[in-house]
Length: 79
Length: 79
Length: 151
Length: 151
Image (tube, rainbow over all chains, first blue to last red; front, side, top):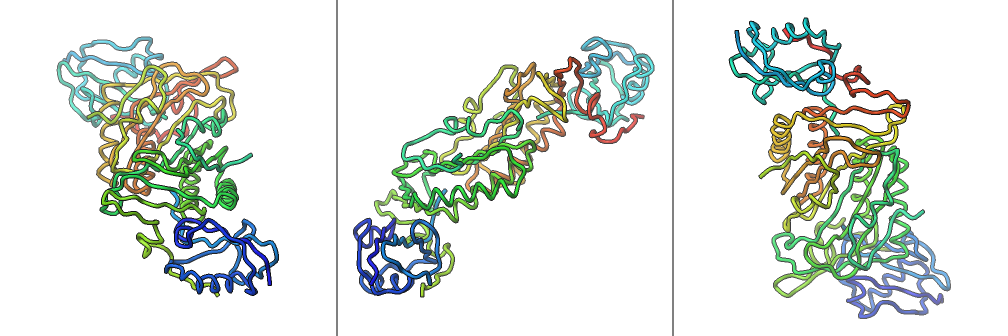
């Protein structure tokens, strides 16, 4: 079990109803974490979602460690 | 004989020593006029010189008419 | 030195122009994105940019660093607005100086293109009809890259 | 409406920006040429632009009209300085707005490229060493198109 922090932005922040949360998870990777939270919150269908761990883009296979900050990144729209 | 006006710009203005002049010429075309004035002033060697008659670009074969304003256009360097 | 910034307040390019002024570089190319009163056939009343700033600053810096690697430019900077924007507000500014305009144009174009697709910024449009939506997520989601289910 | 102008006095892009502001066009691309303190390896102290204004205005208008024909842009304008310029002064400004940045960049580039080669403007550089010369005529004349003797 890892104790991690999640921040939600934009469409995910509005969908979940808060900007972040801390949680204990048995997910081994950030991909498994996404699946776990999708089961809980039923995330909206989105295009290619990316993920950042501790403020860097990472693969979905990245292992979760205690204290990680995880951010799911829905399709961006700057400019 | 056509009575015409010439304006000189930039390197030609400095070379001739004035911004313009009126003259009577027997030159039939603006090309012949250039040759006539080159004979008088010995214009400096320049790249591709263009010519305007009455504030429009014209061919060197353009016939001269009374009252024309002729401008020789040395290589430009805007920007 | 930082080459990418977020601005939570309205800003003008003049405020940042000094960052790219350079006596050895005579060519300055810039791009500005302004909030339009319509998009994709719908009337827009205002919009909202939300950014993941910690990662956005890093990714923005990387984009500008790549522009320096690819093109012979003197200076470059990009600023992106966050928060609530009104019609006509400046959303993003890119300024690049170079000795030659080829490089200035190419780098300016590179930076805006990459910033738009890589920096974690999200845009929510508020429509004249009263509804609103996150662009590329709820609105025009088909324009976003095809979904890849995380595993 | 005029889309090309000469300015005998120093000017700032902000003065002309309103000419291309358009609520339907969110993308603004611009180019500015500034006077550098050196050119081709020589120290420059100041420079002088001379224009054949009557023809220059017509040719400048034609250049911008061609940009409107070639690219889907909303507005475009170009201003070129004349007279004596100091280091850091703005020599030329091109501003273009369009719904999409592709067109804005392409048209901006087209206008500056064509203005530089077609509009009758001449530049004299005054060097730190004390001498001076007309560019493409007395200085770097080899860069000008090969001579065609008028017949």
